[in-house]
Length: 296
Image 1: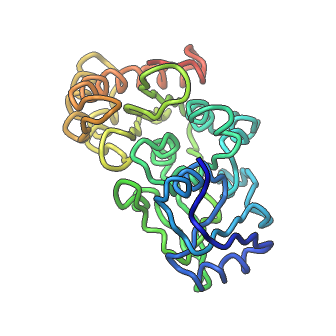
Image 2: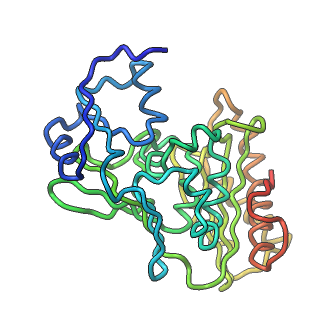
């Protein structure tokens, strides 16, 4: 399908040049990074910008760094680069695992982690992982820089609180100081490229605390604090797991759509929670399953 929408294409070489464009055009401008969503929207006339600013030539936005326990993903880092990163696999295997589930190899080669959360679809695979790590999104405009908590980032389906004149610079989060085990459980209709029917990221910490976040089980990705409260300080006994599964069903609000019914999502959310917690706890102890092995 060809792009029939007319717009001006610009390729800024510096961050300041890109910010000047966004300041001038505001909501009439679109930022092109990976383009896996934007190009589709242009072809389908969902997006009709006056100008498209391709930021791939802006230096410094494609780095993966770990400094002093802080992990930083530049705005241009793709999912394939996350998968290929020894730093990510060593320091944050949960993000590595979730990245393996994103779309297809071709899409992962282009799609950026920052773009995934900017699209703000309820099924964004990176979002639950970023949520359990309490990530912050670093954004900039000509007015300055601000840090936005991932818990505040999503305003609703396909909506964020990013201002029209702002660009994402990076995503950052502190790695826990204690040992952890994690698991991302993704429910799909078939093996291969598919959006999640539901997704749960579980992080089990060596201090006997738990972090749980979901995607595709409500209007936006989110942490599950009530479920975490049930789990914290406890071992994963049958009784605790049963109460946690009962609790998470009260925290999520899945819908019926082309990919699944609400009832099926509710049923599978309990299954995914149990399996992801058990796998995360096993990995914390150095036992199977290995990261990258699906639990659903």
